Length: 343
Image (cartoon, rainbow, N blue to C red; front, side):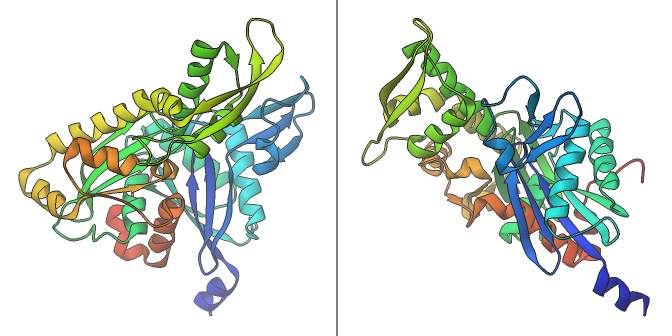
């Protein structure tokens, strides 16, 4: 009877708590929420004004009494209160209440510290979770893609998120070596902002930079180069103006960030044991995360490493789909979860 009651009324939830987006998976319902990790708060009262897409639309457009916060920075919690608001609200939007919430599996960077683990666990517990489990983003990505991480073969995954890029070699249900570099979509956006300041004396916002990256950004030469009209504020005379830029210029702006990711991949390959390295030569590198959608990034990595590179199907949801598989069979994936000293 207890099992029947629990299966009928209790919900297990997987959360990909990302710097750019937070995705919520509810067991038995699939992905139910996928919104930007942004919270807007009224400064005087502390009242929540907006969360998710609505809050993101307010970036750079609010008056002094409203603060728009991105509570996660470089893949970890930078603002605890705003993170709790974000988790609470998005779980509520998924149709799960504190009364019906049972287990939460949350994805975190591989190199997370004990303090950061506790911060994530506390935020999930305050959302009402009875059990909180943490899983490395790279491991969740690999599980979500369907790689045989439990077998004695080398699996190489690169998860490029908003704040970090997670690079890991996995075998026998564990991570053989990993690196977490603080280079991702946010740094790419910042590189574009700085490029316009430096070359055009033009100030653009973070949202505009992201739109430019998505529209005409690339890691290698395109078959047909693209152009785009950019609006911003002239830093010399202070008035708004529009300029036309090409994908060649944006590629130049993104080159440093892309090179850092490629260098980290090469370093990880150098640290990989020879038997696993031979597996990777056959099986290649899998790219996941929003950054994997940058045009020709797979070709650039393949050119620089001489390895086959593939972009996962629906790379934005691989991580949270991995949490879903973990929730479906907790016993099987138990060894792949991050151990918490508090537990």
